[in-house]
Length: 61
Image (spheres, rainbow, N blue to C red):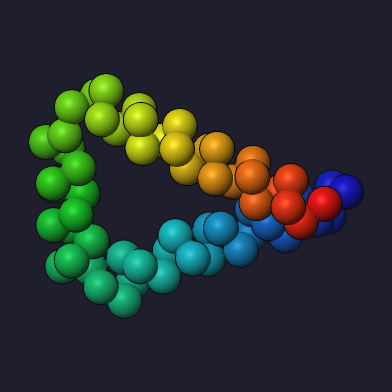
């Protein structure tokens, strides 16, 4: 189980790193736009992504 978790984290880091590496200008513009969003809006997006992740894990198992 630990190996699977580490592999999942590694894949997430690879995907997260590819975006700024391949598209640095678009990534910067996105980060600047995100910095202007309200805290509540950012929190809602985060909660939504966590829920989607849990649903995907539930469907896989």
